[in-house]
Image (cartoon, rainbow, N blue to C red; front, side, top):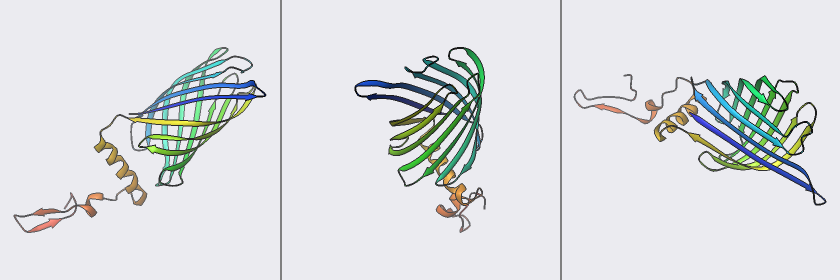
Length: 212
């Protein structure tokens, strides 16, 4: 299991007058089915004090994601989901999002997230993040997002804080990280073959793989 929590609060003033007040919360729970595919559930709340048609937009949905490409520096994922939208009306919508992450340095990464939602008023959200890893699964960075809701659009910037929760042991986390690094070389690359050796004292033989 993996839990992703995103929270944004953006406020902007001009000449002492508030022009923007936006609160965004997104909770996404992933369950890994295979190395490439995972199931997801999500809750998203978007409150905009100055939205013309309504103030709050709430989405609850479920679907699946696919890890399109993985390397040491680049990750690409695509997610599909069906959701219930509550805004000025209630309706079922289809969501599609694409995530692209590029690791610039050991602790610095750039991510672009594009989201499309169907509905009476189609919704698109493109967000670019530049993040610095403070500790394992904890990041701080800056964000730039462009949002088009059909009847109005927004362009906001903010400082963001991110955290990921992994419900697995330290051993499992290390194993997943090792597999990700080995897959860059080959999906059949054996880590044990190059770092371990087994000695058979009874017959004076050794082997460096679990399958001699």
